[in-house]
Length: 200
Ligand SMILES: Cc1cc2nc3c(=O)[nH]c(=O)nc-3n(C[C@H](O)[C@H](O)[C@H](O)COP(=O)(O)O)c2cc1C
Image (tube, rainbow, N blue to C red; front, side, top):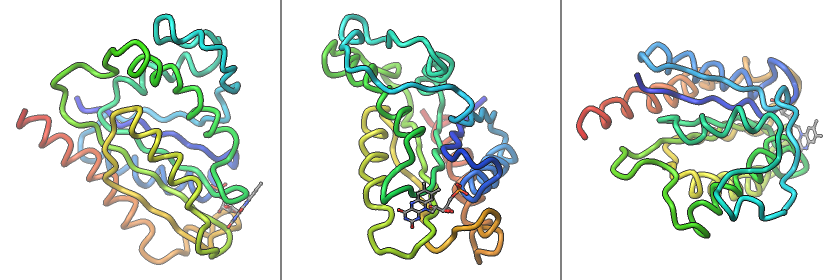
């Protein structure tokens, strides 16, 4: 069965970005995907130590919640990351998760080994975000980070939802079209990905 990994990057339980994520994952589940969701703030994550320990074998030496997440980041058919804008960028917790993917970078670019099995169908990814303001560059910083993450994870971005002007908890529910758009992303991650998998 096709798997979709959902990553909730806000500490605010049931907040705007987690709501978008849940809409998206529900639609993916309805398409028949197996959904695995992690709330990153429940994982007790630590930052990358830049110890280069991963240069030896491509695995991270830091023993924390990332050890539960690493296998999913490698095996998922699709990945959806949801996180709000904090200080014009990505909040610290999801950024820690991204930085800890340095071991995958080492695996690929230092050890010249593949992250996913050769010949595997393209993995799909989506980024869902909200910002409290309508600042024209509110999403720019995080988008660069996500693009770099997808590159290392060998994921093709197929969906992005960047919703400005959504601040208080629950405001996303009043945002016209947000539910439909999030569901469409979920269907894309699950449905089209399944079709592609069948064809290969
Ligand atoms: C620490 C912090 C920093 C924030 N920084 C920004 C910011 O730089 N620009 C912005 O537009 N909104 C900012 N916001 C507002 C959030 O992006 C907004 O409330 C969002 O809807 C929160 O999503 P959530 O409910 O998923 O946590 C910030 C909120 C917090 C708590």
